[in-house]
Image 1: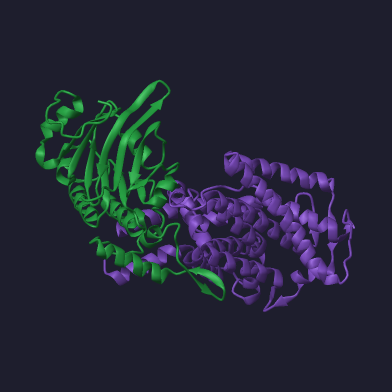
Image 2: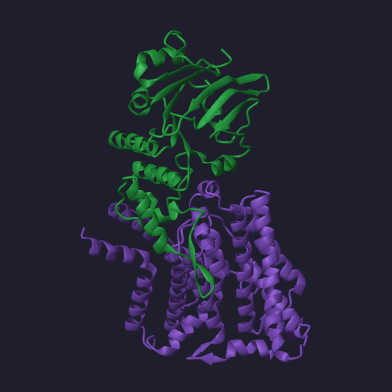
Length: 331
Length: 258
């Protein structure tokens, strides 16, 4: 195969999910009436923000060869803590800060702290106590959600302070500021993973932990940072979710874990670790949103979304296997 | 061979009542390739672990470049320039050649105050190092998983040399390689040695030992049963030393314990 053709093929393989997204958007635009308009695309981006942010943390831990099932519950806890402190109705305490804008950094800080602590606990149990990450984070998934229900007593907090809400309402180019926060996260962490030593070490640990250790990489430290980041990023997702719903309910965000997993896998991250990039994950999230939007527009019952997501995950894994085969023949 | 690179003097190692090594003495010169031979259980791996810092000897001394040498961990030995190259434990196959070459030692440059991986410089240095060693790898941006076993070994060895390695221990380096790759691997070991690096290779295959080694050191029941130049012996004599059938021709420097 001539080098140029080979390079082109490698490029397509590396960015397959983006091509899938384009194809899917093209088909929907052609087939579904009213799909092809700026408002719809803005809506897809907006819908992707919370799930997208959550997927970043999950992807980082999976790329390092581990697992974090707790992201959904951590997001819910962060949303609940934020709402209980700064929402004025329901179980919200309605704390008012002066000046009012202080509520933005303070509520975000509170959420990130909660997420970071849970991430650190997960990391400690996995790295120091050497428990299995799947089990540790499954336990966190359960007890953190339990904590959300216990804290709230099953009730909800509404009417988040206007200064925070503003981030969800104010639009630039038809997209709310919260979506820009998500995009900024993707840009920042994509850069971190691809261009910094920390990102490179994360990939190496996911690929061959023993080799990374023997090469002098501080494996425990890097993994700990990954778990804390995953918790904090999930908390950020929860904070964005609270802004979007202007408060929190006890079952806020339940079921998001599986969508996050789907996005990560569709985005080309291997569950075996060591493989994946964050732009791909973002494309995976956009793809899920694009399909959700199509289902809404066509007026299909919402249950079909789940069926389609499930099939999409299967297709993604199949595609991954196919990609591997093609790459082997290229080499 | 003026000053030896590494000297072993009466090394012993006991695990409880079991004496794995009963006084091992020999030396390795700069640029010398030694084949460490011996039957299973003779004490070869215990010895290699002691040299590379994985185990501490019960008694005896080691001198490395004339200095007292007693590594307490593999990283200490590595810092001194001694390393065991294990297959599958040295490379991240999901990363490209350059990334592996600089694993744990990545170069960065500041972009707006943020340290960013300096891929261009790393690629250039990798290319130079591999070219100097006569290793040809088509694309340095290929992930290692797409390379052959021989190419992987070349990367490991060149990396070791590039980062100031002085003595490399290879445990069955050709176990998984084909004929042609083994031939190239043996050639590469000669090249590495030609740069003044000491090489100890553990192997069961007599033919390989005779192809590459300057000296054969045979360990039997925890002592040196033979330490002899390749030119002064032959495969049958060495096999005799390994199994203990012959005592003649076992060379001048017998271990202290025998």
